Image: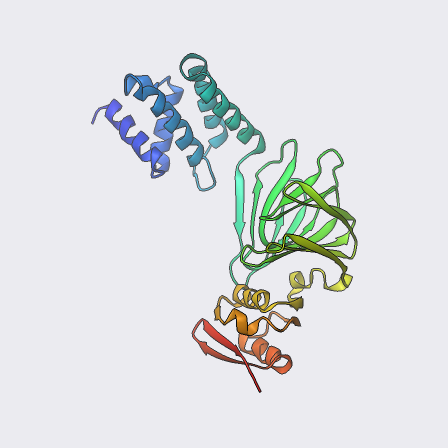
Length: 322
C-alpha cells in the first residue's frame, strides 16, 4: 500500500471514528507536512472531503482521544484549515475555524458520570467544588474561558468560587442557574417531572429557556414542573439541603417516582411499579446509605404500607390495600 492509499484509508476510518491513536498521529504528521485533500480526490469531492475531515477531526478530539500532545496538533491543523478556508471553502470553513478556535479556548470537555451507589467530589478549573450524587452526569471544560458554564443531569451540590468578572452557570434540561459565589443543590434527573434548586448560602438566579423565574436566597427552594411548566418557591431546613453528600438518603414529600429513582441510583436495582397505583402518597425519608435496599423498603413499609418482591436486581412494589 503506497502512502496516498494509506492516508485515504485513515481518512475513511477517521470519518467513522475508528482511528487508532497511531493512525491519528500519522494523519496529523501528514497535515503538518503540508498534505492537502485535493491530492487525494478531485473535482467537487474535494470540498466535501474537507468538510468531512474537519468534522471528523473535531469529533476525534472529544474526550477519549489519546494523543500525547493534543493541543499543538490541534493548533497546527487549525492553521492549515484557515488557509484552506481562505482559498477553497470560504464562509463555510471559516465558520468552522472559529468554532474550533472557541473549542481551543474553552479546552477539552470533560464528562463525569457517577455509577449507582457512588458519589463523587470534583474540583473544577476555577476551584469550584462539586459533589455529584449517584446517577449524575456533569460536563465541563478542561479550562474555563470568558465564561464558566457547566451542564448537569442528576443531582449535584456546588460550592462556587467567587469571581465577579465571570458568573458561574449550571445548565440542566429545563433550568439554568446563574451565580457569582454561593453554595446550592440542584436535582434535575431527566426521568423526573420536577427539577429542584435549593440554596444553602448566598443567592442564585433561576431561568427557564432564558426567562428569569426567580432569585433564590439561603434556605429557598424552587421546584419546577416540566409537565405544568410552572414553579413554586418554598423554604427548607438548612440542615437537610445536601444531606445526601454526607451519606444520607434524604427525601421530603417526594412522589413515588422520585423515591424509586433514588433507590435505583443508590443500589443499582430496577424497580417495577404501577404509577397509577403509587401516585397517591408522598414520601419523606431520612436514612443512612449504609442500609441495605431491603432495610430501606422495610422503613418505607412502616410508614406507607407496601408489598415488595426482590428477584436479583429487580424489585416489584405494590401498594397494600386494606
